[in-house]
Image (cartoon, rainbow, N blue to C red; front, side, top):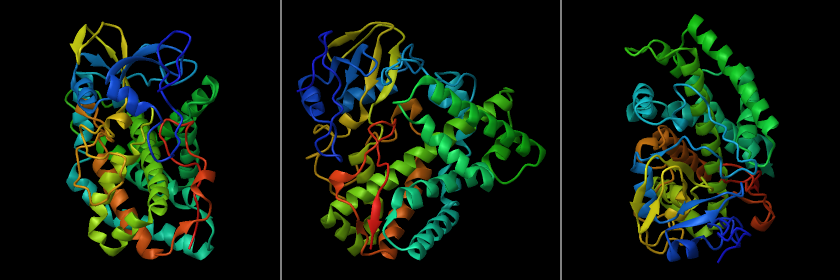
Length: 400
């Protein structure tokens, strides 16, 4: 089922025989025990939660904190958290509740829908450039990375001349196979960029999210420079990298499944369904979300003691047959199910509506513009992002 370590607990499976399916052995672990002990990349043992209902139970339970003492998914085990207010990923209630409320009003469905024309323009311009260049082209470099970078940079008002630097920083900060110094250096570069951006917006407010936060009603007095930098950094990096991964990996999957791509080409109204199935099937948070129990908790037949760490493996949960029938079948006509690609509970992704809109526009436009788009290299020769926080492809050569 999975490799056994010297300590006795099985290692969390990471090797994939099919790059579009979860790691081999993960389903067996879920079937045998949806909550079990496992050994992680750091060499430490912790609880591994793989069942759909069990994952949801942990993610909605305030007894599990995001302030973990050790990182389980990196070899050094160091926790790279951002201190201070505004960094939603590493906050518990009540600070998380208050700060999320301040930010959520800038991510309403209405405001995100208003971004559609600008997103469509960005997509069209990049496809124009690809067509002018001619194939083959690396779709990741030419489209999947720059499109979400442009969208989120426009939203936050990142200057055009600094957007390439921001892309480089985002990639560096998402690696799990580099030393601490390299990650810290990327963090320092991001901090410098964000500080300058906040100062510029305070001096000359514009029609962007940072300017909106600067001028928002703040009865608690929490929106200071550090809050703005933490919030912008968290959202910029997360929104860019996740959407870029989904565009690249989703395109690779559709090109590898011509029957499903034909359905989308024949009926463009399926794009919403297709995006939800892509999100479920490719759940790119490949290592899961880490939590620590703040008190003794009993559920699913096990007792998790206060101080013990837990990993909710959302990828395994999204392939739980108790949640979705025949989970390994990719089917864009499947009725959308409440997948966990955006998380669940208090920490569910605040930018999920923006991501959905971007993906709908991308996959609703790409195959109209390039109906004969195809892979220029066999799938087995592609380099997948096993070394990154979010799964995807490092490059995607395509032609038409």
